Length: 438
Image (cartoon, rainbow, N blue to C red; front, side):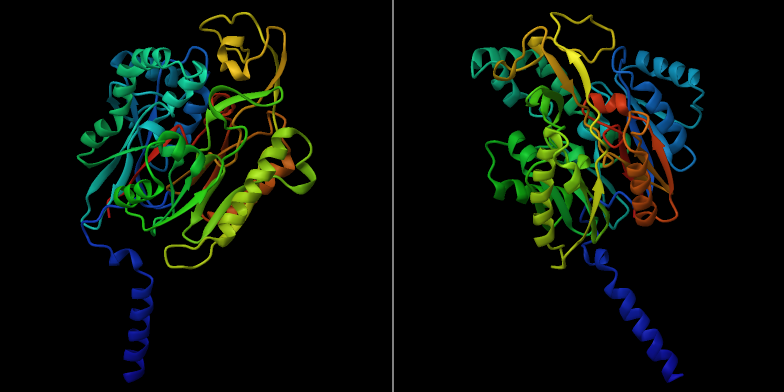
């Protein structure tokens, strides 16, 4: 009997030592890791005459529905009806999808939508970050070369729609009867990466660009307060093919557009102690200038992660995940492009003056293509595929094996989201998980 009691006591002690989350005050909100159980996954929708997002959206919904409740937000009822018609035409079963009208809703719901939090009392909350359209003010200063009259005029033209989009996270909170935790820090959901135990990964390139008047200490304090974290790891830069805003000269005649360094393009937790990092192998780094830039950036980030510690002072395991082969599209700078038609072409006016090209110049447009823009939910991982676009099948199989090993028991589904990549986003940016209440 004494031996049995001893075994029970040891088991109880072991269990208690592995219940660190229980040490949180019951009313303290925090962001769970993405691999934890979800009550729902949200998607956005907007008028799509040129971006061709719909096929990938339909495949995402079809893959998600057997595993988790799908919720969708629309700016108005007209778009909702259009969405239903489009989804049905693609053979998507729309029954069971919960649909909401939320003025200001855009497609990329992770970035402007609700960043959901939970606590030990079974309550839900939303971290309400500031929204400035991916650092639009600073981009306008580049476009208008510091002419503040032009900058302010351009900002004012966008201000009303910007404010509406910035309120979508609050509308989602109201829809879910969730508490709103507000902060003045400007930030997007695609740049939040947590392990659910107290560690947050941020990227300096985006955070300081969005918040030029805030000190690092103030920013860290706010992230800790709002997301319920105690430990922050700072990456330096994101991928070169995720430049800040639309459209930018990356280097030479390589051009593209993006967020300027969202973490969901290059660094992700797969469990509390393991981090995936985008990687370019030594034998591929000199294939093109983009690879060279990414090799240098990710090498620096790797060194940071090697020296980083988790919230308990322990090191991380780091797994290097190959980036897809570069998939550039050769285009010619044209005098004008036809409105409301899909094209990858540019006019000189698309660029800031210091990076402008001339009509007739040949460019290489690159998408924000990365295996890191994936979504993990109940029993499922949605991964982007690039083999149809010309990337290596062998490389994609290596990626599959990594994800099968890191997410055992979850179904791996590859989805072609290249149209989203051309506009600077992907699967993860297109979705937002709503965690289950504890």
